[in-house]
Amino acid sequence: MAASSGSAAKLLEAPKLSVGRMPVLRAIFERLAAESNELLARLCNESMTFFVNQIEPGQSWDILETYEDSVGAIYHAAEWDSRILIGLDRRFIFSIMEAAFGGDGSENALETSRAFSSLELRMVKEILNTLVPLLEAMFARVSPVTFDFEKLSTPLDFTVLGPSDVPAVQVQLLFQVQDGGG
Image (tube, rainbow, N blue to C red):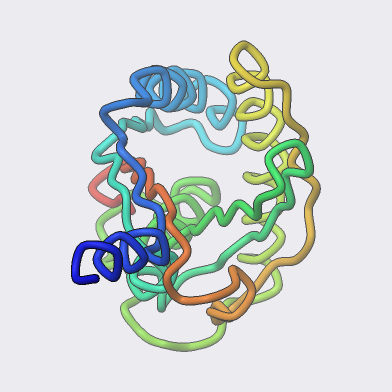
């Protein structure tokens, strides 16, 4: 009986994702980072750099906790029967805003919990409208997918991604412009 109860417990465990079994994922996001530099160059005259910092598996709500002070865009990928969250942190938004509007990067990024302005949210939408089609094109080589925009969320609502133990993969792209980033 002990062996069968252990087997039943294994069946009820949440599935685990192995990023090592998805080597193309890193290549997709590295290419996205490289092409993002060119696409977003039209927003500001400053040189910027995107690069893949990490790709890690985790649980949905644990990952969401790291985006507490961010803008989250929720997309639905019907082909994958999944929701995709793209989080842009406060430092990224402030850094790109300063560079886009002629700042020199000498001011410290505003580290406050004030609500994002309508101009900042419009910039977020412009960035997403530029990057999401590129992300779809990158994934199309492996699995054709369309990311349908659902909503922009500030602060992030944890319940939008379902139960707390849903397995997820977090891809962190870092951004650098002037002396700022995110």
